[in-house]
Amino acid sequence: VNKHAFSGGQATIEEHREKGGNCEVDISYQYLRFFLEDDAKLEQVHKDYSSGALLTGELKKMLIEVLQPIVTTHQQNRLQVTDEIVQQFMTPRKLKFSYDS
Image 1 (cartoon, rainbow, N blue to C red):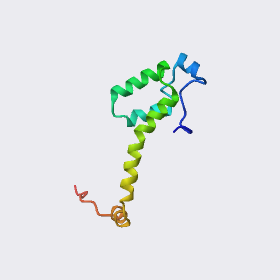
Image 2: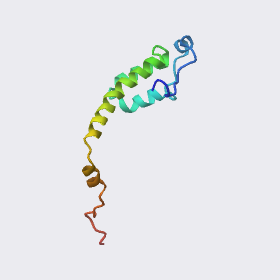
Image 3: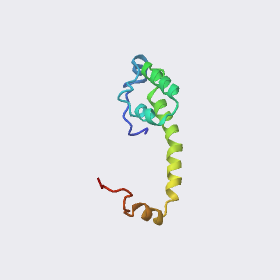
Image 4: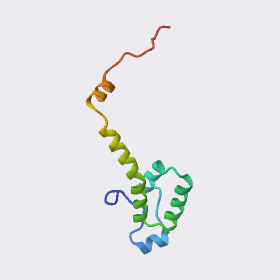
């Protein structure tokens, strides 16, 4: 996230504080729209980032904190998947309906 997520922030901290960031193009903000469950907090982030009160690095840090538990849970669940589970899931089965009119 820190290295590859495109930012909607300005070129310098001073310019960002003055003009604010663009939430419409900021990838970290766009991800927060999907993964941050607190709508009031998301609105506050939008307000703060757009006004320049919240810097790009702070926004990226916030996204990382939101994503880490999700990724950790996914990794733990993935470790529990066995070859048998994959085989059962991938085995074609007949559907339980007919096209009789």
